[in-house]
Image (cartoon, rainbow, N blue to C red; front, side):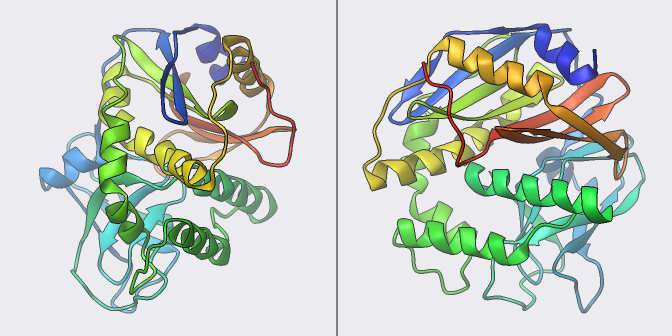
Length: 315
């Protein structure tokens, strides 16, 4: 059994919590573990790392990350960095080793700005909305498979941000994803307060209405607890769009959720040397796309999404 299969097999599916059109099933269990890394926000707050443009001229799909800490720093796929020449999101999850300097792959989420706002990037303390993360995941997996790169389709990313701004009737001067989040901040806060992480929770399956949207998994309960609010916002953004569109509410049953977990466990796997530490694992199946960072036998982070245009498991 591979590490993803083994890890998911050892978890328990808890009772769901639903709020408006978002339902979250907790995943608990597994070895009790404390993370041996810092999270991006904590490292930035402590001045232990910095994120900058790669040069004075800059490069849209790349940034430089310098880790000055005495331990590794975990960067999460989809996390947003704001400032410098334009706002970006991370294309993959990366574990940057102590003292390491890396060029990291990113995508722009602010089409209308290419001008200095600050010398260093800061964390937006949010993660890109889940549908765009899903599509970006597929694009990056294709890039790895075809070219050995970790590139997303920048035009498609801008298109997704523009579509979401239109859905929420947001007029952003620089076509920035940040302005969309700011516009719906009150609704996101209200939805976020509807969910709490459980003791020992390391992951969750997220559903929009009665359609399963994705799965998020980490290697330690404290990592999940810290990042859970960002993940709730990521899926809540999609739930709010469905709400505005008048889509039906509902929730999938536990058998449908277990079926999706089984699909993740049985998905085809391709592995690549990771940027930084570990192995970059890409998952493909007839109904899903996913990516994971694995260090030895430990799944540090896994995201798996149901793709559109295919049959959905419903409870």
